[in-house]
Amino acid sequence: MGFYVTEKLVERDVNKEYSYDEIWDIYVTNADYKRGDVVGVVDLDVMLFRVASACQTTHIDVSRGKTTKRFGTRTEFKGYCKLKDLDYGTFSIVDGVEAEPIAYCIHTLKASIKKLKERLGITKFIFTVGGSNNFRLDLPLQNKYKSNRDNMQKPIHLQACREYVIKYLDAKLVSGYENDDIVQGLSEWINNNTKAKAYLYTNDKDSFQSLNSNYIYNPMTDDVAEIKGGIGKLYEYKDGVKGHSLHWLLFQTFLGDPVDCYTPKPFFNRRYADKSYYKDFKDITNEKELLSKWWDKWCELLPERITYTDWKGVEQNLSRLGLAEMMFKCAYMRTSPNDDTTFKSLLDKYEVAVNE
Image (cartoon, rainbow, N blue to C red; front, side, top):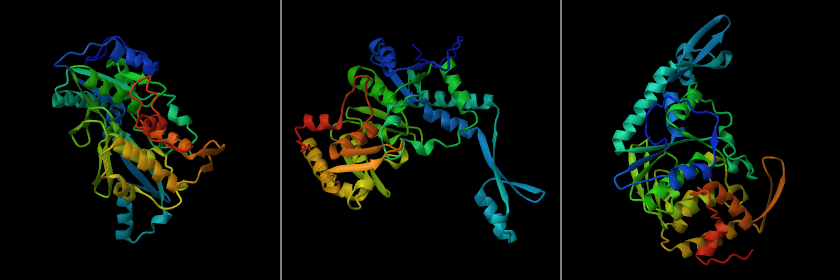
């Protein structure tokens, strides 16, 4: 079933993609989880990017005339110019990357998986890798969903690492959804419907919106968070706001996420950001009250109709509910192939009326 970290002699097709239904059939419908099983549900996109990035170094080659000198960073070169009283703007700068042998990268990957297994006592693994046709890419946002990553330079060995985990670790290449949807859905299902325990491996803050109980392991901090679901809460964190469960989901829906390139803020009739939202909603402990106040504030900040040109150049004319639904589609992680939760269905569930 592809659970265990063993290098299979058979090489799998690195281009074969799996729908959410197919992955669900493999790891839910046809799977067997017992008491004592500890399942690592791993978003390999996170691990592979970290590993591939760690196995290369970047530099800049600086030239003027026939002379070329290498520096680690632009900051280092600016310091050099200041020290030598040189004009930074008169130099030509070319970025460069040097990667270690791919064998080193694969070794680091194996060590990372072994360390994770030992850290959490994992007995079974589920590995997934992000593929194509993410439905959020077609949403008529002002800016294409996650378009800020289109020109991001990828580590040299990233593709080779992706092919390795698909060939030898039976990682499933996801189609139609984000990897985030799949791993959250699988880990939540195992933790709430079996006697096994699952850890979701991710550093994505979206995972904290779980409306059911879940365990989340963050590789960046080496911490495990237990999410109990329900209404959840918001709390101040450094210069911003964090939270979990319904509170966190509605926070992201209301204000958007600049990391993923979606936000309703340009349509607000006044400035309203993290701290304002936190002050207005932090003390609410009842789902109906939370959703009612959310909708009232939404209507207070927005006109009845929202018109704009989307990223494809198409003129859009949305109601306030229509805009809320689009933001919700960006924020909400689908926790099963049949998860048809909408913002309106949440309102209906808690008997919150909307006048649209």
